[in-house]
Length: 309
Figure (tube, rainbow, N blue to C red):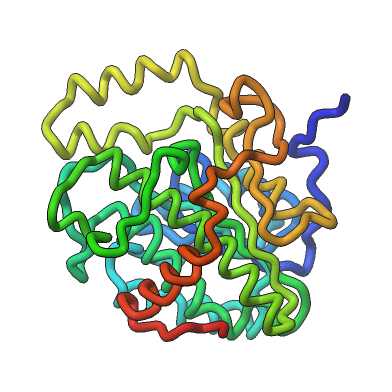
């Protein structure tokens, strides 16, 4: 059976894509693959220096690509609003693909610029606000997709609407699981609302399985546990490279006929590695009532309004 890979990506000439967290890991691979396939690609990155290095790498590997850098700090809603405005202006009123890829994992207790728990605020609320602020250019002049990157960790996640910011108690992995579950609930509700409005917009999700990226090192380092960061690097012996981990995202982004609300991940060894395939959602990720409630709370917390009704 043929396994889907980079060579199966369609020609994306004339289409414009934005990838958050494109400075390293899966985001960098995703941005490069889209650029090589002809897409005009915007790398949305928090660190301007690392973002510039990633942009330079894309331009070297895909010299005929039209690639740009935009500063985006998902942990700061003012930065999100500014980046969305810059992107909307740069894409000339039409954005074909938004890849909500950036994220943080298993951090010590930290707060965003707006006072939210860092993982929920970055992984979910930042991307929620970015997507809603880009709705005026998504799916209004031709078909568009939003692909949000979740995780296997969503399976142990629970949404606590009464304590979304972990003010009563904090657990690094519990907060991460909640944020990744929120990604899937957002994906489903965005797709439902887009269909209800008749907008030509598909919302899909993907996860990278167990992939070797820098994501797992930030938490231990911020907590002062350098030994844990070194241990995390050792576990890369059991993971697949970022190039493989990016394939489910690219599959969701470009597969012709992919249904809205779909979720993809690696197809082998319990979805930890292998070629892209449909992935399993937990029962909590299929809770439509919770998806609607989380959307309403997220709209209030981010000050974006409901976006789509």
